[in-house]
Image (tube, rainbow, N blue to C red; front, side, top):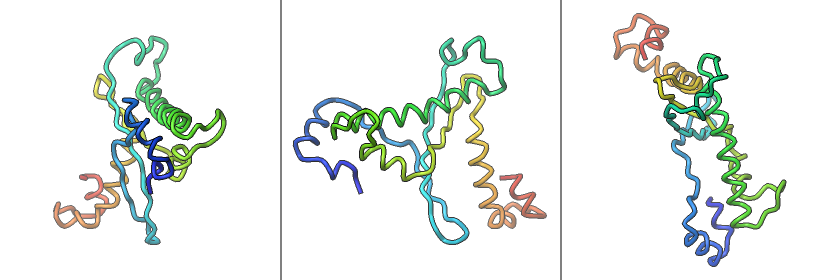
Length: 155
């Protein structure tokens, strides 16, 4: 259920009138495991423009800028929810409020970051490989692939 259901009508009105953006997740993916259990994964999608704050001169690693931004996405979302918990529920620093507690019920946020030069974060590769693996059996015949491995690589 909604975390806001725990607030009073007055608290909801004050939040609505504050013009603060309420954090929303970009994509929710629901995947079924082999044992039939399902897991919700939260995906945040970000693009980067070129500039010294995103592409610092001392960052020379391959995909370094998008990796840095991907790490920031996760920290930023947690910080936003902590701030919202303080604003709406009056939580104190170090205390976990309802919004952050709800975030903790999910696996870690998956950051999809695309850089100014077309580079992307490793999480995008991982998710695409997972989807290809999941679809290989169904798509093998449709693609005319000689094997599931070939279908997976084509997808």
